[in-house]
Length: 459
Image (spheres, rainbow, N blue to C red):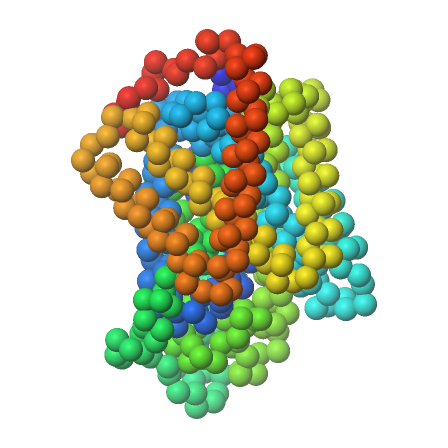
């Protein structure tokens, strides 16, 4: 059954490692970085740089675990399939539905954000119209198949990288006085100036560093298309190293140009850093960048949740109809269910009070990190681990745990943590309920048996 699935995947256009890296950048750079970094700065001050560096390191440890499992045995269900093999059907079921639910909430918030950004230019048009247009465009991209998805995401990736590089160039020129003005450079020189709020400030900012790198699950789903599967780890290294460099450089420049206390959480730090210079095009350019970034990550999320729904249907962890495809290409039932979820999510984002919906989206981001525990755990169970592997895996657990627990140290993110626990409890109850039916209708043992080529491979 799984070998047939993999054969079908090979019908999709194969990717070179650098193409996977570029797609990874496209699926990762979103509004979470462009806007969320201002919240992180307000919490940690200049020490936010460490939040992004450590988040990059932690993300790499998780991605490496996922990549090595993919190299050993490529699976269309990626992380949820490995969780199922490592811990049993309950893990694959809960992992898949936790991911689907969290991404649906995130997609709703992305569409709302896109609509708000667009009203910057068209203030008289209702938000729901923009949300509907972006939803329609997103599903059109999905319906074009992998070829259309690749082309659009690659284009948007180049545009997002170009925008960040543009900021770095403009910021550097501004610091050298090219745009006039006599602005003092804000550079921390003491421990207290670098860690103005101490470790209680850097801990809650840690989660926003991870938000900037969220998306490795999507890369795991795409990695099955690599021409040379052994290059999955290389693709991730290049992707994460590139992201870390441009993130740290751009945030570092913003902090040098503006004292950290002057940043507000309602506006991107990059727009604020250039706001005092006579550059009237900056707000418009970055508003366009926010739209591109949000749309790109939204489409990537749509791709991921549809594929996860299909694999859940194939494994009978969701109604089997969700696995059906038109002409073996278009997963129409899964697309329809996702569209319904998007509509509900957008309605909630528009109707609920802003702070309440923020709790839900924070919870959704945390739920993605809960799945990273499954990835690291599955890696340890399914592979023969070297001492170095165990050390990196332990540090991966520690860094993700620090990011999650850090949300308890700030009033902005603390409610989101509690909401995420409620979501997990609900999914756990549903999983226990489903186990009752699984006992009555056990699957074919051949489908549940781990692949002999996958068990305990040393890479």
